[in-house]
Length: 177
Image 1 (spheres, helix red, strand yellow):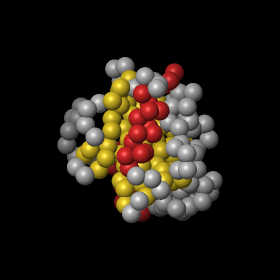
Image 2: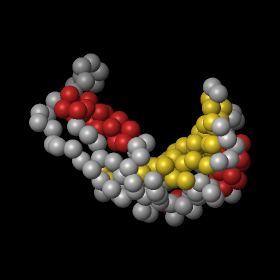
Image 3: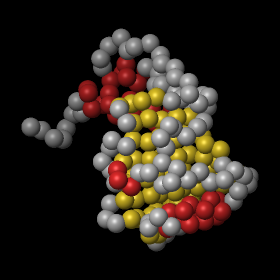
């Protein structure tokens, strides 16, 4: 079996579908709406790229879901609380993955330092430890670790007094409450 070399059509199609789903989560459709384009007419990777991805709430697999403009149903707010006064741009939750994955994109009219401080407090109260470092390039970014394999990252971009933050967490399924 050859592991490296020419990508297989199924692998390319799955990668393209994942990219499209990620991009669609950044769209501006109202929460709770799902729109799908026509089914692809061929099974090649080009058709996967040409077919529109769902926007709004959708379920990629049992236990995995995304929402635009709202917290996805079942979002673990005790693990990743929504900062007061923040607006949800998108969220996702896959409780069947190992580790479980949670993501949140939000905006708030507060400085980036305030956003990082809020989530630093919320995460350290749950036993996460700060990893050294506070930026990636010019972006405020903070990583947290709990145990050997539970991680959370928060990245914040501030423009004209408005902060957009992205939080991604990979945690043991038992940690989701």
